[in-house]
Each structure stands twice: as C-alpha cells, then as structure tokens.
Length: 181
Image 1 (cartoon, rainbow, N blue to C red):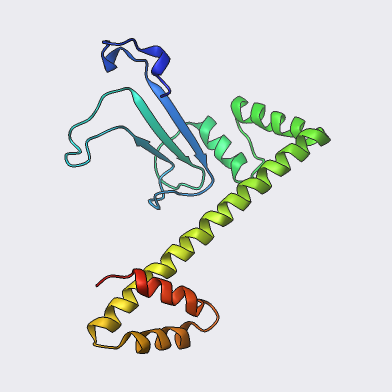
Image 2: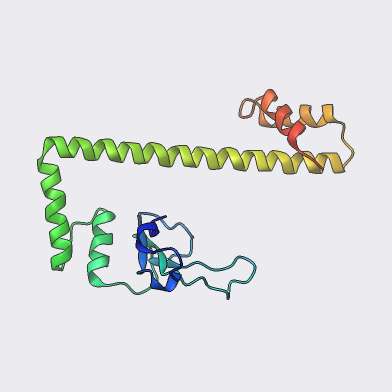
C-alpha cells in the first residue's frame, strides 16, 4: 500500500522506485548476532523466485556483533546502547538532538511516556510468548500422557499437581479439550 500512489494501472512493478522500511532494534530479532538483516520478497515454496518490487525491509540490530556497517551507523548503535562516545559528525548531531530533548521538560516527558509504552508493549509480547510456550508444553504433555494410555482424569490430576498455582485447573481443562491427538 505504500506505493499505491506511485504506480498507475497497467504499469510494471519495475517502474516503482525502491522503498525501504527500516526497523531500529536494540535486540537481535533473528538471534544470529548480525548487525543488519536485509529482506526482499520471494515466493514461499521456491525462494529462488524473487518478486522484484524494489521493496526492502532492513532490520538494524544495535547489539549485533557481525557484519559491516558504516562508522556513522555504529555511532548511532552506540548511542542506542547507552554509550556517549561519539567519533563522527553524524553521531555528534544525534547526540546534540538527544540533549535538546532532555533539556525540554515537555519533550522529555513525551519521550519517557513513549519509552514506557514501548516497555509495556515489550512486556506484553514477552508474556504472550511465555503463555504460548506454556500452552504448547501442556499440549505436548497431554499428547504424551494419552499415548501412554492415561485417562483424561489422570492426565488432568497429574498436570494440576505438577503445575500447582502456576496454571489453573480451568486452563488445563481448556487446553485438554482443545488438544487433538
């Protein structure tokens, strides 16, 4: 949808200008220790088929250890990671902009509100992931217990005893009802 105004009906995708979506991340989303990940559109069954729309998604990981990036980008990563040492003009300009925000009580409050919302979202995402992992673990245990011939009542009692207050009996019953062999 980003390019909808840039192409007319009947035009080829190749007539589009390249577009970039860049994510600045203070963590490694792919767990490969790379500083930069570049993605382009390809066909799922045959990744060698690339849809050349000029759309580029770039994930920049400030905690990455491998890969070549410019000194300016490394300075930006250093600032993202809380280091004030800057050795180039770009990093210095960003540092000055950050200092300006800190000097304005209104902007600093807006920034802190933004940071708090980001942290809340991150925590909600972590909690959601942990709950999904718990459900998956419960499903796996239920399947294994069923394969061993345990009755539904024995399975539920075993899981309630094992998980105690961490997972309610009601939640265990719901996962058991939803889990197919």
